[in-house]
Amino acid sequence: MKQSSLFKRLMHINMLLVLITILIVTGLLIQLFTGFYYNEKKNALLEESRKLNNTFASILMGNIIPGSLAYELKFIDQYLNARIWLLDRRGIVYTVSTSQDRQAVGLKLSLDEVKEVLSGKVVVIRGSFGGMFKTPVLTVGSPVYFGNAIIGAIFMHAPIYEIQAALYRIYIIIAISALAAVVVALILSYISAQKLSKPLVAISKAAKGIAKGNFDIRVAVDSSDEIGELAKSFNMMANELQHLEEMRKGFVANVSHELRSPLTSIIGYLDGIIDGTIPESDRNRYLRVVKSESERLSRLVSDLLNLAELEAGIKLNLRNFDINELIRRVLIKLEGKIDARGLDVEVDFAKDYMYVEADPDRIEQVLINLLDNAIKFSKEAGRIAIKTYQKDGLAYVSVEDNGIGIKEEDLPFIWDRFYKADKSRESKVEGSGLGLSIVKSIIESHGGDINVESRYGEGTKFTFTLKVA
Ligand SMILES: Nc1ncnc2c1ncn2[C@@H]1O[C@H](COP(=O)(O)OP(=O)(O)OP(=O)(O)O)[C@@H](O)[C@H]1O
Ligand SMILES: [Mg+2]
Image 1 (spheres, rainbow, N blue to C red):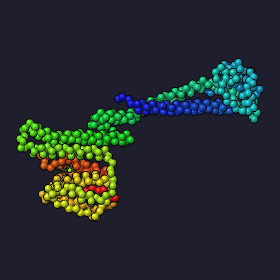
Image 2 (cartoon, protein in one colour):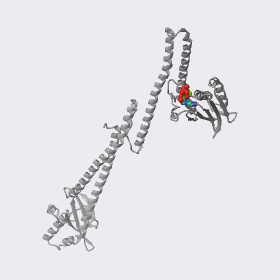
Image 3 (tube, rainbow, N blue to C red):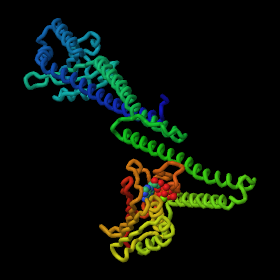
Image 4 (cartoon, rainbow, N blue to C red):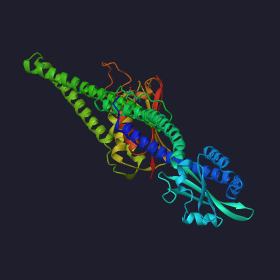
């Protein structure tokens, strides 16, 4: 997989966090262990000095013979890993535990620390003990008592490199643990960064695919976190886009078809008239067909323009007007068609006036479309009922017919552009299937609702709502 920059960034952040944490923890551990170890050593030396006070006192009092003295000090030296200097009360080195320090015997030490110890204090120093040692030592000095009197001082020098050597072993353990922690943390952060970035990479790849027009792509992410949510929304968007794309393709195909069929017959008839295949006597009849086809084309084009306008979000020319009055005017307009089919029209207005707030031209379009359908799809001696009433603060208008009705399986689709329930091309009923989609757009742009009830073979009722003025 190509590593995304998000992945790299996550890894960088993780690595930085791990390193900083481990450095801090390691530093603290080293500090802690070092302090602890020096303290332990110091305490051990002091403890020993205290325990051996009487031995040192006897040595200083000359109660122990030199041979066994050397042996005794050497033993303590080895046991504590420290060089021992015993000073008398004037600060002169009386004896030492190892022959390496023999040259110090008899020297009078004038260090401040020596004076402090001889005055009863305990001192702890790190360094060369006033230049007496070439390598640094940890020195613990304490007074030697005989009864309550200070009769000398004991200095124990533990070479620091030996303490350090013990500490190094601990440092190595700490370092190995830190390294192991880094490795484990890196593996874990690699996995988590991978887990986080992989779906995002997949989503971005899918988005690019969709941008190229491949609408079948979906992302397979099923985590329940925000990324899963994103993937779900993405897939929803892809579904929507695919649907839109299918609609667009269908729309283009429908428009082409609807435009081509009248044009083909117009051209065909005109050709026949020009080249004389259609006899002189029939010309008028064919020219009338050409005219009606042209009118159909013109209607279709204005319907399409209307739809496009509505979908682009037209500005409504809102006014307060009496919808009952508008219905009366529309009925007069359609009188010819109604009479031609011998239909009975009933109007039932709950009140004489019903003022609504809407765009009257658009609502007239709605009424014409609904009534046009009611007329077109009526049966012999049909009846059309128009009602207006108010309910729950809304104005209701219904157009009902007892015509052919709509099959239940067609009902959800009648609002789609170009949808006609009767698909047979020879169908006598004219229309392109745009009427109801225009109606729905208009009502919805007014913030109203429209719905349909229909029984196949019995009749249909459309009801829409508008704002009361
Ligand atoms: N009152 C009705 N009775 C029975 N069927 C109807 C009724 N109104 C609509 N339909 C069905 O719904 C379809 C879609 O109606 P719509 O008004 O959108 O298109 P159309 O009337 O066929 O064409 P156009 O309105 O563009 O001239 C119709 O073709 C018809 O099958
Ligand atoms: Mg119609």
